[in-house]
Length: 129
Image (cartoon, rainbow, N blue to C red; front, side):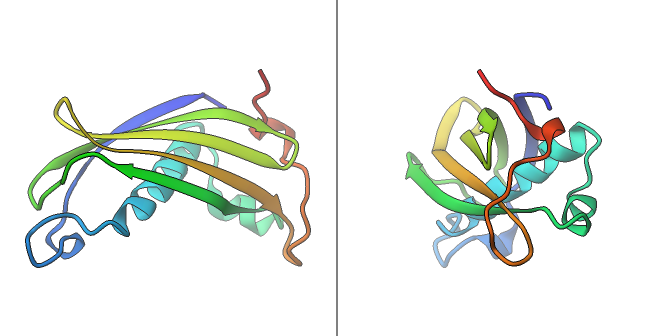
């Protein structure tokens, strides 16, 4: 699996609050989309991973908001897989508008089965350094 991926995403009106600023909760959605985009870029289909009984769930998320993004902005979302080994995946994110950093974040993803028991990541998803 590649370590990094980035893509552009326009801010939609419904993602903003009354002041036209992206609501803080949407950054978690942007990060989820980034993880799915990373899988898609490598030829993995998250739906097929789930069909195989492998669930990737957020165990921890930290977001640092640096400056506001607004309706009409185009976000550049960068994701890096720092570690993917055992039963966890650690990611870092930088979200920008142009050169301006809007948010920085980290997540830890846990691999579980349908009963909620921790399980090892599939070998093809592992990155260990």
